[in-house]
Length: 134
Image 1 (tube, rainbow, N blue to C red):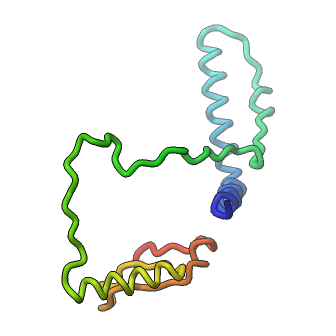
Image 2 (cartoon, one colour; image 1 turned 90 degrees about the vertical axis):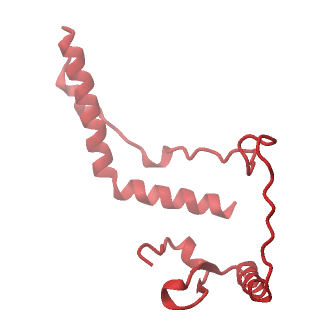
């Protein structure tokens, strides 16, 4: 439930930041509708462009689907034989990853820096940090 609240807060913040662009887009869309109606011969006033209102608090966030499946069409594909981890090194690598993941850390690949993982506190996700360009 906390994730949904964070998502709503982040979406609301993005909408508030982009409000001028959103209203400009709505105005352009309305102007096109008015121009199309005028092209059909309808008498339309430009005052309709002034009445554009947008309420950021009423944006709907679509609910998450109830049913999750790892396969879109179950039973249509052969199951793969997944035999990982095999070697003691892979087992150790997996156990370290799983331990850090279970403790709530955010992990990314550390190959670029000569390590197995880059480990970040999970709070970074809730604050909107990303690893673009890592």
